[in-house]
Image 1 (cartoon, rainbow, N blue to C red):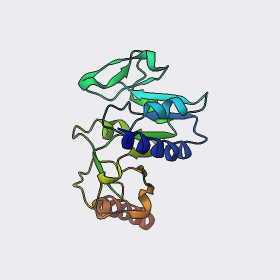
Image 2: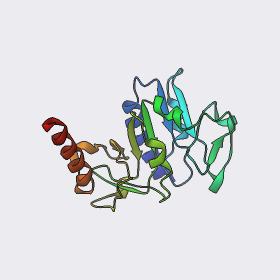
Image 3: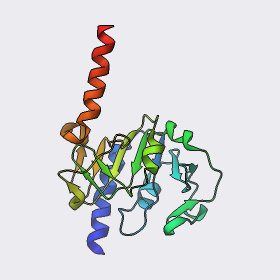
Image 4: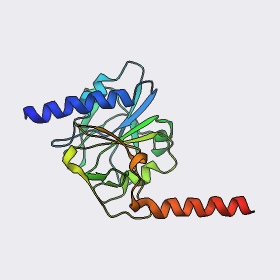
Length: 187
């Protein structure tokens, strides 16, 4: 447990650096043994709008108004009991902190397999940050066309800028964008 707390403190410092200056942050509510997010939320400066997921079949978000505003949700994951804002609220977030089971240094994220966050992230512009334990960084992961990569991975040992390590799992996406850009230039 002491090791877990030390790892959470190290991730917290890195995460606070990444969110410095943000006016709105979206962040999942963690459960053991995930990296702690409640300490992160309580460490954000006053005035930062915090959005947390409301777990339902379709992505939904609510404004966080303190630990007393949380209730048990599906699978024991806490969720807000306040007004739901819809998935559109996520478009205003400067930083979006995501959960995951594993990732590559290139930003391929392995979630729970339901695609909930991939659907929520469509149309967002905020920096996508994934919190992991360092041993959850792997060389390769399968990727589907609808899987959206993360921009940054934060572990207890390092902050990884995924674009610096772009891996082959997103090469089809890069090729498609490049091909489209070439077609547009030729037109």
